[in-house]
Amino acid sequence: MIHLRFSIAGPRQIMTAPAASFRFSAREITALPGQRPVARFSSRMWQVDGRYFTRCECREPARVQFEDAEGHLTDPVGPFNTVDLYGGSLYADKTLLARFDEARQVWGTLQPQADFVAIIVGS
Image (cartoon, rainbow, N blue to C red; front, side, top):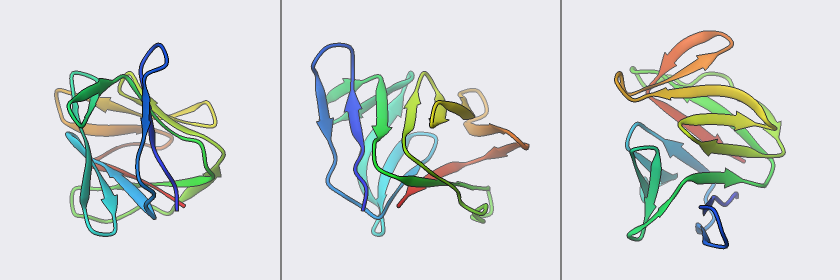
């Protein structure tokens, strides 16, 4: 099980309930299994319980997978010690893995270059 922590400059932060994994789509984060809503994404900010945050991070060992438009998942990469999402970018152990393209509503990976509809971060 892993947790997500949402934060913004200053001491404001909250932590999610644990889940086996989290799915980051174009507009929301859901906890898996069960698709429990966790946060909404808009204008590069995460909205959780009516509060806004600029950063989402996982500080527990986690693996990352990418989901294509047909629902197929890539092989997992990792584990990583840290996974961070901020400024529309996904970093794993401080290495940039993907960027969110607002216009096309997809996550673009860098190696290899490809587009995906969602990111799965799990234990």
